[in-house]
Amino acid sequence: MQDQQEVRTDHGERAPIFSARDISKVYTSGEVEVKALAGVDLDLFAGEMVVLLGPSGSGKSTLLNIVGGLDRASSGTVRFRDEMISDYPEWKLTRYRRAHVGFVFQFYNLIPSLTARENVALVGAISKNPMPPEEALEMVGLKQRMDHFPAQMSGGEQQRVAIARAIAKRPEVLFCDEPTGALDSKTGILVLEVLCRINEELGATVAIITHNADIRRIAHRVITFRDGKIEGTEINQQRLNPADIQW
Ligand SMILES: Nc1ncnc2c1ncn2[C@@H]1O[C@H](COP(=O)(O)OP(=O)(O)OP(=O)(O)O)[C@@H](O)[C@H]1O
Image (cartoon, rainbow, N blue to C red; front, side, top):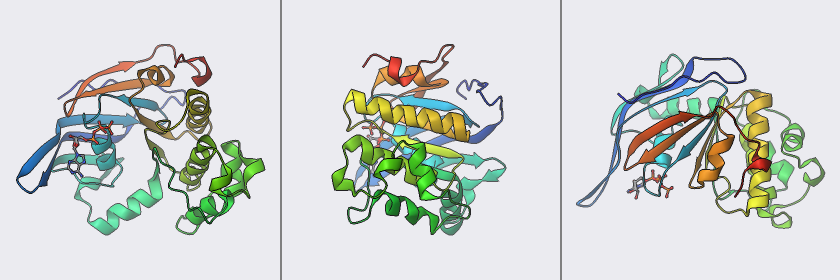
């Protein structure tokens, strides 16, 4: 088993909310098998900000998709609090994802014919206790742009709408796969500032997948991947604000 270090976040909580054990994932297409993950253990703690680093193809997205309930492992277990979600049937996994997990991807996947407010409001329709869209958009600094359509916004603004949509259901965890991958550094920093704010003010666990090693400085904890395995975990004794990272 790989070394899993505990981290004390600003919220002082120490219990892992996720525990994945011995996760392997093999993709098969025709006669070709790709081993995306080879026996990975991962703990994610309540209220922490984690950066997952590693070269392309090292298994970062595959692991977060499995922990987030978007995909299933070939073997291994995933526990969310007291629930073994890797045993869940499909309908229960969907319910878990809907209630607890927010996703942010490199491309924003907004509906072009809806305004920012309407894009965020869609989530309200499938959540138990959603944030009003206005509150979610205010949190990402877009209160003034609520009635604008995606085409009227920059890439960074569209990404912030996508983040507002992800947080509107008040998720306990936000999984972000290359959230700044399509953005220039100045805009990317604004997006990272929003993610830090969500971590601090909502207490949500935030996990960010990136290729950009400079982003590691904003995390409580950095997990490095190589060839389908976790190569190492380090705790940042001194975190940086996104505006202070060199990029
Ligand atoms: N649906 C799929 N079918 C077949 N192979 C896949 C599939 N998804 C991922 N893979 C393979 O699994 C391996 C791990 O991919 P994954 O996307 O998890 O890596 P990653 O570290 O997130 O890479 P990147 O940073 O480029 O997104 C790669 O070799 C990839 O080609």
